[in-house]
Image 1 (cartoon, one colour):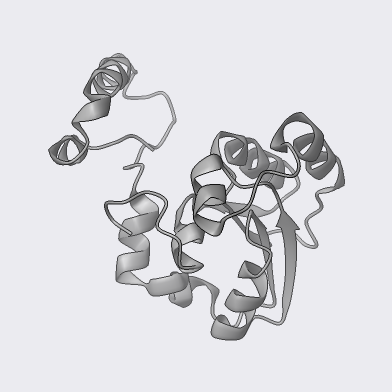
Image 2 (cartoon, helix red, strand yellow):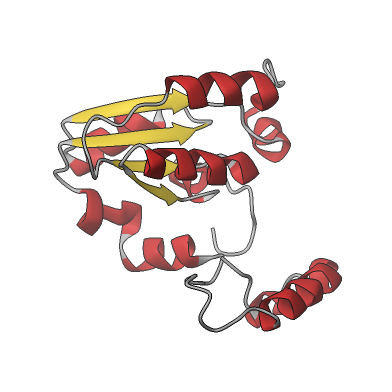
Length: 170
């Protein structure tokens, strides 16, 4: 996901970084086989379909990787999902500040390596939601390798738990 120009209306602090990203993107070949979207796609999807209910309601299984111990049960109850598998990872600093906790364990390398080694997909096409920052992209890739489908929901998980860790859009 790439940030759109509209982001500059409220986030001028990262204009230089976003300019470099635009130059990189302009240099890509149209036929490179990749699909690109707005980095805030998950916010747009959630605005249209809160908690991704159309996609997830009544699912037999949902896997989660996030810093929220209660997220899996919350989604299972709200969306009538029969089985959830919850993998809790340490949250980023801004989330820790909001919930009033100090980081007890490091995400990388300890928890990251442990989770990658133990991660399993119960059946081909099983859906996972991932909120793991930069390392979340690697979790998504591993889930795909194992035959699952992973959606990187990012800070949307924080919003679903009542924490606004990003400001605009949540």
